[in-house]
Amino acid sequence: MNDERWLEQLAEAADFDTGPPERAPARLKSQIYSALVSKQSQTGPLLSLAATKAAGSGLCVFEHGLASLSIGERMGSMNPCRVCHARVLAERLDHAPIFWPCCPYAEFHRSRG
Image: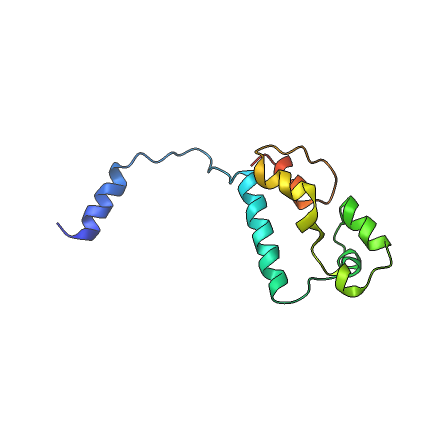
């Protein structure tokens, strides 16, 4: 029996769940998001908070606070999520109690998946 036919038979015999696909846990989504933003910031500065807001993206309450301060462009292009307690909770809890608007970590946990 060739390998291709054997794999076809194996696939036919498998009992695949035909229900809806499982969603990634919010904790995993949070960890992936943090890793992607961290990797992105290694290649250069992130878009400043002012530019992010001007582009139509929402800012979380902490980003609003930073954006309203008179800080330099370099500080405004740093990732405030790295020091935010929401990131810490989101990466470690299955259902983190994060409720403020425009926080990506809160959105991952609101969708419960």
